[in-house]
Length: 503
Image (cartoon, rainbow, N blue to C red; front, side):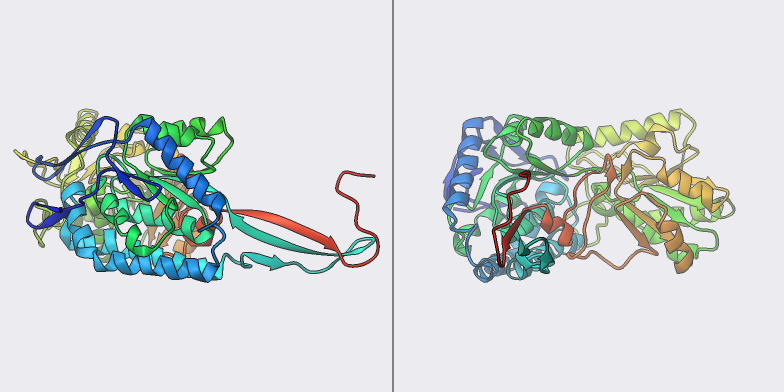
């Protein structure tokens, strides 16, 4: 039986493990899911054990080689994926309310940011399941004249078993970016959501029985560090797709290296927001602030380093004070709320600690009005000035609604500051389009938007340089992460060609 929580959200009725089509109660440590807005316990469940993680990967491997999904006709895979997305859409209200309660994303933006874009991503990959990647699942190459005329084809086939490890900030979007391409390619999957916010993922997994996916195609384990390590190290796993911090991503790489498996890492960012000389600040300032306040700053692509031409600095600060003063921080279930809480007390304290150290070192709050709150893990949005690009607060990903603003004297300096970072995930540039595109070409970042861009797209890649990770999620590039390419060649006449390496 489902259990009601909060003001109407419904807890999933299933436990934290789905192995080979059967729901199981975990055999590991207790996991406590907390509402970050009011600090109440939403749910307690027993996490998976390492042995259950092993059985989940074994089930996925057995399912892969039995071929019920991996060798299914592409159009049939596409049909079943579309059916899964239909079920997702039908449950969108329940899933949105779960995310509000376990993540703290305001309800006003949850339907778009957390739900609709996840649906769009899964729909796009459901179409790709039938179409295949560029060139198709099988691509006949041009005839090649060796001593004997030969023909070739490229076969793009599923990479195998995928361990999909997601973060807490966008649980269903991150799941969609992994599950979508993996299923479209024909892979089987073991999903491990963040134990901080697993409820929406469990509820999504309850849809699988109705979606008619063969048992073992998608498995679930909700667990801690030991379970994540086991998935990364397992010889039964062919691909690890991880979203999280760069420090944990480095551990995943090390753990995966012993079995030489493919690793896709979508990690952090400390992204620049460049306001070129002459840009219209009345247009640029409000969205510049929202870009690091969205989801209370709990987004790897938040543009938290704003670079402003020195002559426009004072006006930028004044406009920021006015705009931040209009943002509402509070109950994420209130339709008027713009910013909810951070996920846990330790995350709030981490962000506040960096702010305190920046202020002690000579920084100042240029915009924002921090308040003491008696309940919830809230941090009020603020803009910190008086710091340099090499300061800790300008180089560390905070995952909170805090941005820094720094002046520059010419565009070359702005480019140099923007590129002086361990990360390279996202960037935004305000100014005349042709000039901004010229600057964008010189920014070392996986994504660069001009004048705010044009909204989120499922058909483009997401990922970055340096500490921002390896590989891409979304679009054709994200699809290829889950496919292996095989070359098949044969002679058309005469003697068979000799094997490579022979004389």
